[in-house]
Image (cartoon, rainbow, N blue to C red; front, side):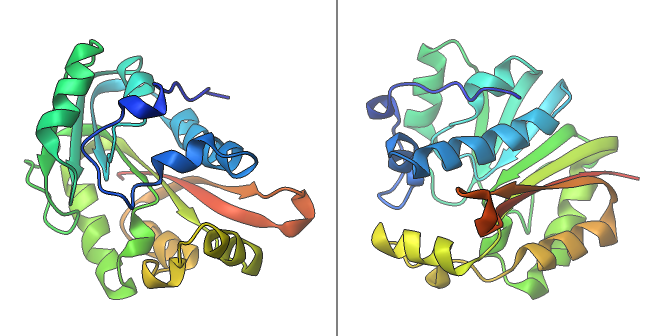
Length: 213
């Protein structure tokens, strides 16, 4: 299993107060947050260029640097300049932009992989096919899409409310909506459930790996 490489949390910059970076340091829930990212990273096989949609703080960039020559990122709200400067200081050159998954500002057949961690659940179900079509368009033939989305369960909803975060205000699509839209555009390699603690609580997260046919 790929191990997520993190900077000290205080170094991360350029994101708003809703960014979950602080959760990665919490007991119990921090382990779950790291594991979901690690499951996504583990599916990536490497190549020339990767696009991370919703890169936030650049949490994955230390790992992505080991697998890809170019790291591209698109995010709706991140402040690109300080995040770029942060990763430049750590020897990780990036190509970051502000933009929307529904209208990707890249040419066709550009990327070996597109990564989306906890992004697609924020789209409405009706927008999922358009997002998948855009992702497919910018992928090279045989390129990977790897995504992670939460599996909404009562325990998870309760835990987030304890943290002061009402997920129902932010999550509009289920893991089933996302998986169905992905299968409509690309070939499924595998879908991996991530179980909670204790395991008997069932899956709390799902990682999908699809390729452009």
